[in-house]
Length: 316
Image 1 (cartoon, rainbow, N blue to C red):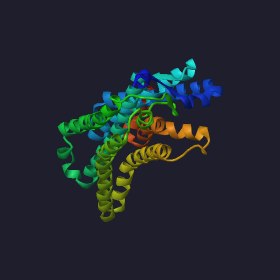
Image 2 (image 1 turned 120 degrees about the vertical axis):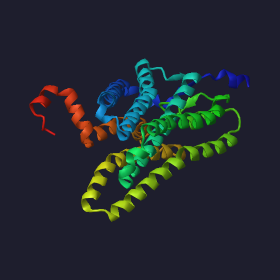
Image 3 (image 1 turned 90 degrees about the vertical axis):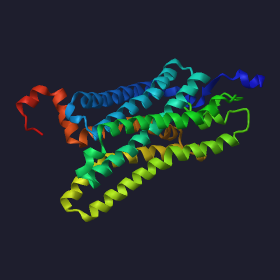
């Protein structure tokens, strides 16, 4: 236990593979982080200042962007600091904070996507009662629940990691992740693995069932509807489906890396797979929604081209 108590920092060994090109990676990730902040903050500001966008769907999109900023900020500044300083050591405290932030980011993302799936279901299957079902109070409750549920369930499970002592310092990643840290524990991890599976079920299954149920009902309605109604349903659901697919791809990359031997995969491919889940959803989601939804696109255009908009009011 004396040796265990001495381990209060860890080495992120994957950074050593980037050492020859670390300044190139630094510039690329810095530009990526600025771009993520820019596109998300534009979307948040546009939805916040435009009263016409204070509808359930747009408020959920705004929360998706807030979570994107939260997730990318939990990772990229830390990575940039390591690349710039050539110091790949991370303290136990900061490692635990990073784990909590990254895992809750992923959980909140899925919660919001599930709520957005439910919103699309109500909009398409119960259009006459939409505003009654999706009242302002219910929207606020669903948004708060998306965050509170993620922090509560993962937080309770995470206490098992916080209470552990560690006997090794090497984490073969460019950031801290729970399963990698638990592997370094001095004691048996069987109980935590069982609790982890239960927590994973609570954090994934209800949300995935909600998304599947919502789109099963939407598909049922669309099969009975006119071609014009089908086209409108496809148009309103496409951005959400793209966001879900983007999220699922990132999850698959993370699961593949954690469950299979990846030593035969080129290192750059492994880095791409590690970062996909934490970079591409925050980057692509606001772009997808900003381009595909006309109401948002018009307001962004008004924000950046007010003079041109006055000259050509019917441009959109």
